[in-house]
Image (cartoon, rainbow, N blue to C red; front, side, top):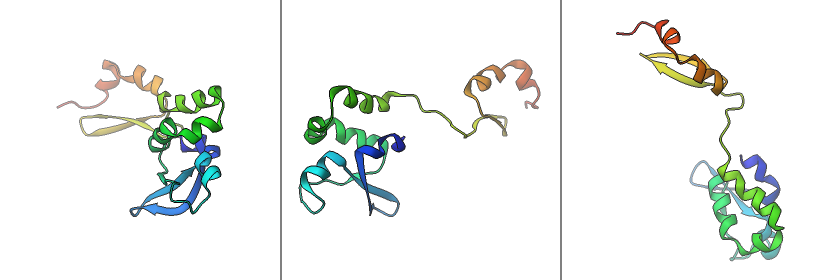
Length: 118
């Protein structure tokens, strides 16, 4: 989901810990510049970025109401498994199904009976 927020953040090569990359709010970055102590780095994770946006005065001033609502609504959108497999574990056997709707339809007595149940 961070991909949807790319135009609202400035990525950095800095890291928080060994793996989490840091970024800046674009509105804050544009207002303060890179070396200003008021510029706060954000962990480059969707929930952290959206949390910053909700509390950021600069973000509030920089964007129109409709655009802000669209951006902040990203937090409430359902996660989708694009190209990833959803799995269901039945008695130590893994069955992969790519579409959540198919997964829901497959869970039936006929489907479960294909596996040995102890």
